[in-house]
Image 1 (tube, rainbow over the protein chains, first blue to last red):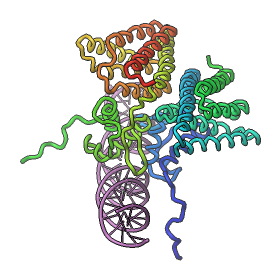
Image 2 (image 1 turned 180 degrees about the vertical axis):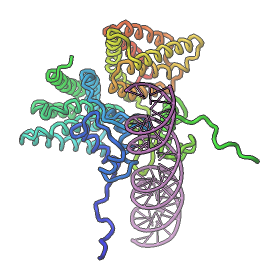
Image 3 (image 1 turned 135 degrees about the vertical axis):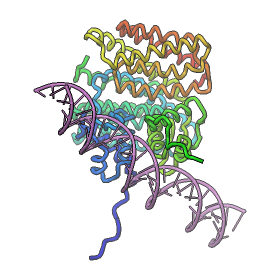
Image 4 (image 1 turned 135 degrees about the horizontal axis):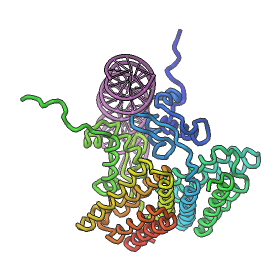
Length: 233
Length: 233
DNA sequence: CCGAATAGTGTTGTATGCAATCGGCCACTT
DNA sequence: AAGTGGCCGATTGCATACAACACTATTCGG
């Protein structure tokens, strides 16, 4: 019986990154509940890779605060930091106010210096698509898509700010905050999403003051909304 | 010539952690300048371990924002985020205000509920030693010891707050901020260090309001001092 | 019957080897 | 001579193999 050619499967571009994103997604939105014990071997089998990529993914997720590891003892999914909710939102307000302000500054700088750079256009284009996707989701009532789109929008703004260190911080904190909403599926409605276009407009207009104010207010609204819902004072 | 017995060296307790701390220390304080290309093999040889612990350390440092890695292309030391200085300080004010406040709350909670837990005592003890070491360094004029002690004090307060997620965030941001001071050896003087005892006292007194106010003011002072020195408006 | 030392099992930590990929150099073409 | 294509060294990504350690259960002594 003739063997088929070795492996015409589409080559997996980056196993480690894929594994890391999958596990994080499963923790934030899905199946991996806090306290669950996760072993490298099990995850390796689940994703069809060896332990090494899984190890690296777990280390990264540990740095992001989603799993706790003890040497030779294994890893477990962290507890959702509900007690830190208010503080996390406070830090996020400061952080996202800064990213929005810087994004607006950078936008005007890009245009005043001739043609914007390629990477700027790429980031801006991504945001345009995200806004469209979100609007479509709202129009069709697919509110369950919003949490993921929401993260990506805010990270997109951070990218546009051009600050790697602020983006890294936001990546860490926004994941946690989205995690807080884990049990609440359609927690933020159409109102919250529509504010994104206002923020985007302020950035495009190169208006740092409005961009920061709108973003801080936007974040503050979700903070208040969260605390109203899950009052843990 | 007779061979010595195999390896009477004191056993290395945690190579990966040690390597990671060493590299980060070299980046923040020492020899590894931004833009330097770091290869796994070279670091492995330097620290006498195989590539795997080095890999994991580099991944962690990448998550912390100290190195940039591209797949199959290698890693380089990141640029010092001088442009983000003001924003990083702003975020840090919000963050450390929160940790100090929570540390004070937790302190009173520990004592009101009978005997404090063992881990609380351990963290508190560490801070006591740090404060003594810092005072001694100031008294003897060893100001070059202060940056490292400073990081550890602030992280110690975060530990005392009992919030893992806030501690993780601070770990990331405080490293960057100390990095900003890299070129300036004795940047903060005796005044700044002495404020630490005031903060500690407010926490021990279980006074969240004072703890937050003092800590925020303390951080704000270093922010102002930094911007005065390296004005990049 | 109970406590403590101990062997067993499972999991992580590290080392080595090989394959995939990137960057630069050189010959070749136009 | 400048641009272009392909080859080669260097480096990382991953898989397999083994060693070190933590946790559990079992057994032995009291």
